[in-house]
Image 1 (tube, rainbow, N blue to C red):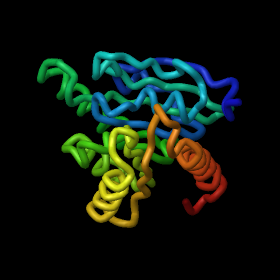
Image 2 (cartoon, rainbow, N blue to C red):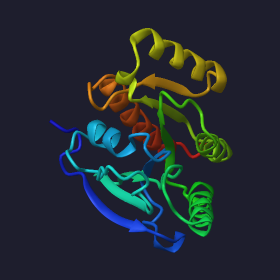
Image 3 (cartoon, helix red, strand yellow):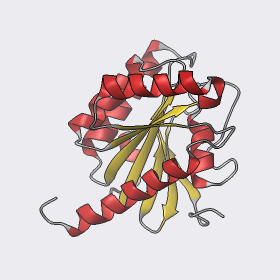
Image 4 (tube, rainbow, N blue to C red):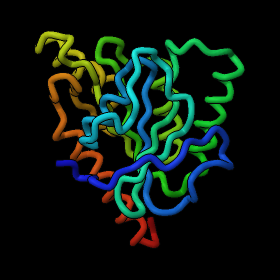
Length: 204
C-alpha cells in the first residue's frame, strides 16, 4: 500500500508565476531525458501512472506539482537531453529551473535520477550546481541498475560516489526489479521530515 494514498496531481507550470503557493514542503525530482524519472517516481510513491511514462524521452516539459500529504508536495522537473526541442525551448527550461531553485522557500531536497550506464552528464552537473547554491540535500538514484551485472553496477556506484563526494548520497535503483525501492522511499520520507524540522527551527 502506498504511503501516500491521497497523492494527486495539482498543476503544471510553464512560468514561475504559475507555480504553487510557496508554502509547506516540496521535494524536487529531476533527471535527464530517458533516465527513467517517471518510472522511478511511480515506484517510490507506489502509484501506477502517477507520473506519466512515455516511450518518447523528454515528455516532461513543464514543472509538475503533485500533492503527497497535507502541505507536502513532490515536484517533477523538466528533463532534457534526448528530447528533440528547439534551442529556445532549452533556454526557457534552463531559466525556469533556475527560477525554481533560486526562489522556492518550500524546497527541501532534490532527488536526481541518473542512468547508471551514462554516469554524470552536463545536465546532472547543472542540477547539482543549482541544488548546492540553494543549500539543498541531494540524493541520487542510479537507475536501470538491472541493465548491468552486479559487479559492474557496484563499480559504477563507487565511481559516482568518488566523483561527487560524501555530501551527496547515491544508491542503485531499478524500476523493473524494484532494487533500491525501500531505500529511495525512506530518503523521500527523510527529506519530507527534514522540511518539518526546518519549519520548526527559526534558526534554520
